Image (cartoon, rainbow, N blue to C red; front, side, top):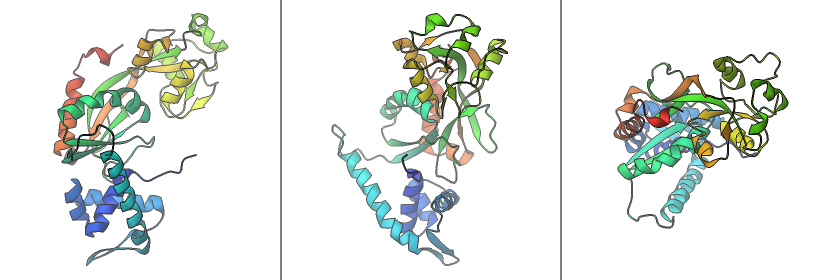
Length: 305
């Protein structure tokens, strides 16, 4: 198992705060409020289990742990910068003037957002996007995240939410399995692939489709902690998964997956772009919000199956 690492955004804030010995100066450098920097540093200290700074009325000083941590983090950030600058084909002198930290679920980021990010970068070459794809729900202010794309019903305290995409549920499997699944009862003879990190899976699909499943065990089958793994397992012929459109559209078009027992059912949750009022006023966040909302105008073909 890979060792859990602190968010890159928090490490950048720590390095800047340690260099300036000031949350205010670090925030000005990285376009964050002093309180956001302070919250992010406290979250980092909590994750590490030790204080990185001594706080007093006279200002900040590094703790023993912070003094030891700083050169290592600074060297790591410098190595990342050198590796990025050395990428073959990268334009020289292309320093970006703005940064955007975005939190997004791994499956949504991989299957929907990343294929479209090139269009955003082409329109806004001065904005560098950092993606946080952890499964947990991040605290935007405390962890230095500008915006998040979340699955839900659009109600989060103190956050503005723009509806991006509705989600539609439909069972999917490899083409070779499809002929054996003509009626809901056929699911009883199939392996059902479960996703543990979502609120709506097999039971939700059956309810939305109005299917009586009293004789079918909808909870049997292997469990996966993210949508992408379950869909890859379905494409490999390991069983049937609940597909989520539009995330599966590319797999359907390529023939890796096929829908069974359709039509797709609209879920009660959707994908939302969320952010605090302060964050939405930042130029980089405002540009991203305008771009993604214009990409997904109401009624866009990709917003429905």
